[in-house]
Image (tube, rainbow, N blue to C red; front, side, top):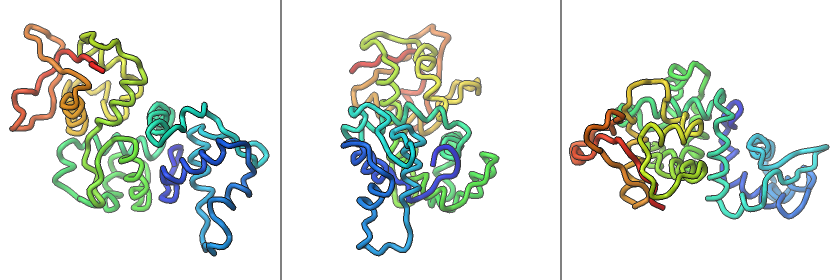
Length: 259
């Protein structure tokens, strides 16, 4: 799912359910498959290997001699939210995989994403061109589930509206900012690396936040989680994506994490 090709059966809910079963104690692959895909359902297709592999890729579980054991502290599985926060800290190790590359390409399109195809399944050829790897419509359908769950945007039918507020919140919490300390924008972004590289290109030199990151930062500020400032005479300046109604809030020199 993350290491190579994205697959639709490996949805977050199935991965979480599998891990919660394993949390109760080591269990054989056959036994847990029987719990998740009971024979009486008479399913013609088994999806078990897809979501089991996703859990193993993420190191949520380990598999030895077809026996599944928990690979993380149980606190990671306290809720879907805690599992999400953990996964967002693991994505950097999958930088060569489809999910990482498609997410990066999607964000690099910035506001242009709003003016094109509104069904992500029909964006496969575009993503193949942008990422340089083969991406099909089934992979894009799988991508939208995880993109929404991991906080890269909000689902509207088959479209994902880019807004990285949840993802940014997770990685801000992970790296441990001093609350109420004013960070220069460069200090702030360096502290988020390498987790943020999936949506903020550290090598672009543009110093302009793309559409989805700008949405995320503005949303976090509106929620009282961060405070963005433009302090005069500061040379270290980044620009948010321009929105007419918010034209007074476009340049950022400092960010403070409030809570």
